[in-house]
Image: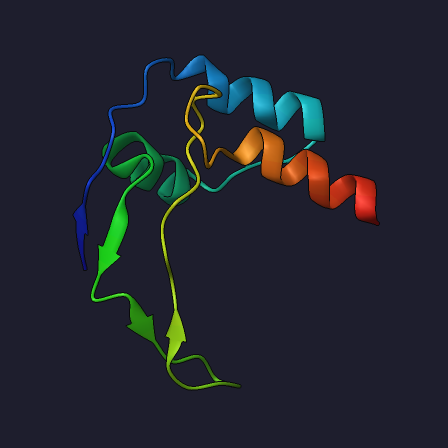
Length: 82
């Protein structure tokens, strides 16, 4: 998989802060992907799972709060809906 339109992660501590705040432990492999491809868009962006075909992945949510599509705001909004 290739990644396009990535934005450098400005502060690696933001990953750690997110894990602590939401009591989440990200796998090392995911952290590596974020470090290298923050806010990136995958190419190809269509994939199959065991249950569905032709799913579409738009982009990785950024761990930098200044980006419009960031994990902080998105996860917070989801938690409020639950």
